[in-house]
Length: 246
Image 1 (cartoon, rainbow, N blue to C red):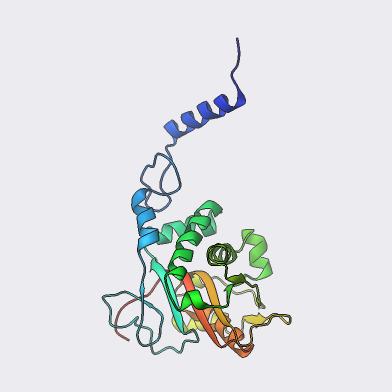
Image 2: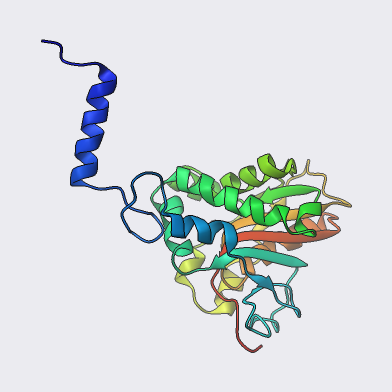
């Protein structure tokens, strides 16, 4: 009696696994027939977007007059985000960043690329640059989530991908710090332009996964501006703060 082809055995094993452990959406934990996210979360990824604060150009909800952080100096001229750091965006970022679900990262990158393409300012950037990880952090995680997001944007927009920054200090994760002053102190002077980088006269699009106070993006942007970049823009999956009075 034939034991069946390897393909049919794999199918049966997968069907059994799906019956015992049905696949769930990484964004909301609801059951899905296939894929990484449910239709509702996919729709949110590709249709939601935050506006831009009219005063300081950080991400801002459309119902808020300002982002609530305008008093803090900011080196980027415009930052866009897909949404607030709440479900499904926070859960998707967490699955990508801390659980190593790089396929989720590819989906986030595609959504972020679509946002960049429809923004006439961001889409006019000369190059896209990921916020770098310190080598020790890179060894811990195994990948730089910002680089994977930036690569997705580069592939969709044909924008040149450049890794022109290095992280010179190993800093504690920003997620453990809620005080804006402590966040800024944590990353102050943490980035340096690579000696062979040519950013003079260029508009650079910085990419990261989450923006909280903007301290990390700000310090990275300062290094680019000191290197002669004419402007630094930003694109992130989610913003932790995006509304209130400044």
